[in-house]
Image 1 (tube, rainbow, N blue to C red):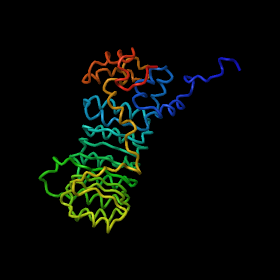
Image 2: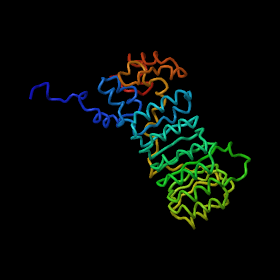
Image 3: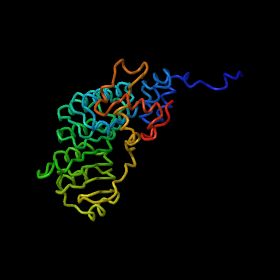
Image 4: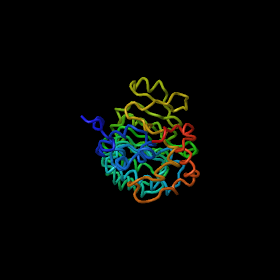
Length: 321
């Protein structure tokens, strides 16, 4: 074998193989580092294998709505229907929700807290979310029992639901049991249910406990209208772990049966200034995204300082390729 043939060239690997390898990298590296190595790597990260799991939840809480729209649509489009997990906060209209549902054929985990979605849009598209097993619609103040009923009727595989509320949003209001009854009547396979600071009564909660016999964990902190104590749960539901109703300083248990969306939890800060800027190669949809990060500072300066070797340690980034 000739000396030049001893090692395989990484840039000659087929895009699908590269995509499988890049899935082991952080989202930060996939978006900002890999595309700069060579054109073949740049093309590879535009394929679906890198985008089966997308987490931009932290970044989306502080970005401009227009920037969120463009980022979300681009990443979901790149998944080519293979998206399995999506974590994003603050969808600000029904159009975004409808768009992600159009690409949800393989979606299993969906976290969209603080989103401005309505009962009507959920009822319209719930049928396209039939593969979802874990759903987080916490702090979505415009939906009610109607939306949860539609979700329960169409998402037959659902085993986890987060429907936490902010205490300021429920303070002073009377008990509203429509959501609890919707859960009880349409989501019998639930194993994990979070309803912190929700306006549920003792009667509606008992209905959930009677119908959802597979429950393993419930978060009832701040559910002041529930008059059940720990002794009751220990006697009647020995396999069920319950937090609340009184607010406690207990450790908030990690989700053991559905992986917490934390793979990229440390990657949100870079998105504000590093994403698809500069010479992104052939795959950046022929459009400049520089203005997306104007609110976060001067992108060009930060990139120049980083690629010259300055401040790399400050941001925790690896050496530039």
